[in-house]
Length: 467
Image (cartoon, rainbow, N blue to C red; front, top):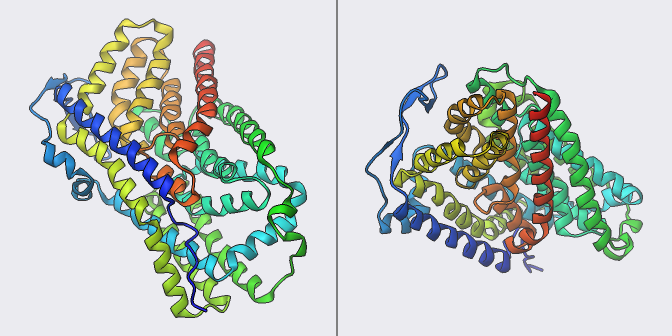
């Protein structure tokens, strides 16, 4: 029989259409913004590490700028040739590998076998397993700055959640939402806290007690949110999975050991990258390669023929291509703003506004600035080079410590990564989970609202105790 199964990572029509509409509206609004906001720039200087940062001794000036209509229309393609596009190309390649590997794992039966085995082992303590999985993902984000690198694990956790009697939203909460929250808490996140503290002249990862407190409080809030949802949608495991009839298969066990060992080595590499800065630029590439090797080797060990594997991989890649379109459109928003030279103008207006608000609200205003800029620039380190030279002096003028300013920066950079439709990791995860952006927004905004209040109170607490 040669009937092809649908790819487990196909982007659903509903998810694709919803995301495309949302992103296209944002593209239009961005173009309108370039017609309203004048172009401007802060002078840049090269720091000791060779990175360009804003010169706080220089003055903002208006410049010639703007972007033509036809260049805006072509921006989703032109962004591939823009400066610093290597990360975007890596994300797209990363996504295609995920699509191909997961479809191969599904076709050879290893995915179902792995999930049945986990449900058979942990089905009786599924809520305890939920808490551990969420803690694991939060720790990856907070301790070593993993975010996009965790995307290959998201479909696995979603499938696990469904087999445990929950739904795809529960799986997304256990994985994507958890890693995003951990990334924002930033206990030892090298890409946000580490870079920001270096730029601000602070010892790397100093002042960790406040970020550890935030980690614990955010974990508790997230666990309560996801658990309450899971309780509402839960079904008896016997209704969704035949794990009770699970029978061990020696060949499948060998393939599973192979897959887990190679993926485990990739996770170990990510852990090492948190302590070896030279590895941090290559984590996504290495994880993608390890995941590709794990998928091919384990599929072949199940007895899958090479030709069948190749066809399954190609079908998975084809099924995930719509997500590439979404990512290119989302990335074009930043490209449009940079080409029109209005990012610095927006930042200059925000700095000026800080001069007329009450002193105690300045730390919250800094939080807001980073939240707004994160919509346009998803990279934490890129935002650090852009914002830290401005928001740290602003905080010092109002008597706010640099450490607290770094916490506000980490909060503003991280949580919205799993909310804004301009973030590639969110688009990938929604694309492979058959959850539309509209459904994700309706489900997650409640947690985002509670978390915004909680993190604002943490910042005000830090201000009150002189952190």
